[in-house]
Length: 298
Figure (cartoon, rainbow, N blue to C red):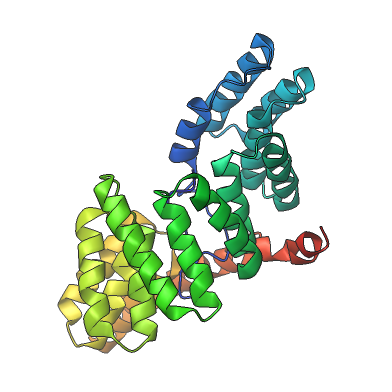
């Protein structure tokens, strides 16, 4: 399902990005349980939609999933697929209704419950998010992604000890599954950073980068090392972050500061321009938080 996310968990993932979604969601769709009551034609439409989703043809995928539920209105997997395509098409309210319907038809649909938890978290509604994430974890206690986001909810609600326990458990669980989860490492490191414990945050990030390098991790570690005067290492990390995700604004800004402080004014100005362009795109991106009123009224 959702595997990685863009956005910085200092107020983590206030919008749902694309990088964390496509590959793992396509795998989820392909491996969805065969609906016992659905006709072969409904399943065929669902399979076509799964392939279209994997190819980033989201509008076409949605049409295929809609055909599946038209053939069999009890086909829960079809509603989950619609929710995922609506998410990619920035129809967050549509995604919400589709996932709620999927759960109504199949209360054991752990992934739709996780999706609802993520949607509410990104809408800045941690209480509602936590309720769905707890249900997801009841169905799959080994879901390290749900653990991580439940930890983020706990942190937002000022349950700091619970948050740290969940982050550490998510790290251990993802490592045990041989799928180290960068967002768990990053979330723990950001928490320690906010607690004024950079010496503890740095090794967490270093471990995460060694196992699952990701742009946010690299940028955050670069920022911490720069603050400790390790400028050369910081610059290398920030350039690696930019190479992984040029659209992320944070490393451009931090690199521009390093360049300016080291007398490379022209390069610093260019990097600051890239930061402003990236930040502008981030600010203009559709925000899940825009549907808070609608979700609250449900």
